[in-house]
Amino acid sequence: MIYLDNAATGLPKSPGVREAMERALSECGNPSRGSHSLSKNADEVLYRCRVLLAKQFGTLPEKVVLTKNATEALNLAIKGLSPKDGEVVTSDLEHNAVLRPLHALRAAREITLKQFRTSLSDDGVTVENFRTAVGSTAGLAVVTHASNVCGRILPLKAMREAVDRKDFLMIADCSQTAGHIPIDITELGVDVICIPGHKGLYGPMGTGALICHPARELAFRTLMEGGSGVHSRSLFMPEELPERLEAGTPNVYGFAGLAAALSEFSLPQKENALFGELEKALREKQGIRIHGYHKSGRYVPVLLFNKQGIDCEVLAERLAEKGIAVRGGLHCAPAAHRTIGTGAIGGVRVSLGRANTALHLEALLEAL
Amino acid sequence: MDVIFVLSSVTYAMKGRDLLADNGIPSVLTRAAAIRKVRGCGYGLQVRESQREQAETILKKAGIGLLGVVPAP
Image 1 (tube, rainbow over the protein chains, first blue to last red):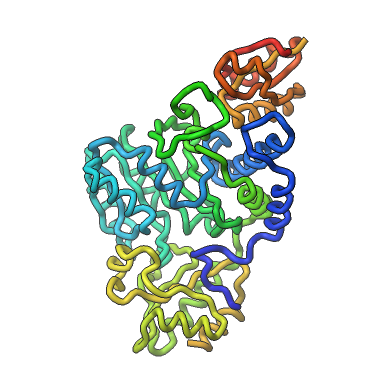
Image 2 (tube, helix red, strand yellow):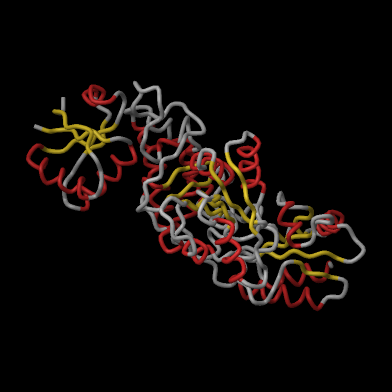
């Protein structure tokens, strides 16, 4: 199988993931629940994962909340930080992991929601549209770092700098950027980033994190309550992160795997060059139309296209029959497809990872 | 004679343990019964009484708040 669906989950997983998970299966009990060595082993696994994530994204271990995926992290952040009866701003490139929690809050009349238009050719326009949408009233913005549909990276740093208000918070969905480009939350300037552990970091599925700026104290409302292993006499969740947002038994085995992946991790060196070659070759191919790509922008290696005369899902199936894994359809982001102009027809998404080579791209082009 | 610093979470306890180790102060992570008196179930770091002052300074400087200090059993 030639795997070109790394935006869904990164494959193959890091070499050390399996062994770390197997070890955790036999050596770990329930963390934070006992004085015995099996429980303590699990605590060590979780802490090591926090330390590695903190190092990777420029924060402190206690600012790393471990979640089951980026979607859970986004829900915790959005529902935990949305201003009551306040205004929230989001972009027109969002995944449903952002849009659905926001619309749930809007449907419950807890927030008003405003969407700003991004520009796929001019970051200055994106920043200006964002600044206008936020204005003097919005209390929160939730914005993707890069589109899962077309790979376009949004200028989050400039956007955050465009709003000079202390009562304004910004959450970034880094599902497609974590592991593909360097991210330092302090440098980026946003308050929270949400990441999956299983995509660009090549950890196991069932892992993710909500990561907070090291210097900002954020008051999260809780989405779930339950055992935390500390402050047991209280009927409320602990005030402090990360335990405040981590109710119940966590996925220790998964985080053992993610820690192994992080300890082996380095940013990809060849992805961008390969992506450039793919874009050029597809553009030259007759009957292929690339969507949402402009040369002036920065991209993670995600490309959307259609082939004339064939439905995107049918094309994806035919490629699968030839041993090539891509993804057709709307990619859980119908709003982004509308923005790009493929709302009615969807598209075929090719997303590269660190194991891909020029030979893989040749096979795709040949199959097309 | 040892004392136990009571901390708000296992995360802070482990961070504190590593920090103290970096500064040459050995400590042991514990869920000793004495901690429950301060705040229900919780975590503590057991250190030697002779190093208590130095350890306390290091932890506080790193922003690790102590919920209390209790004698080790």
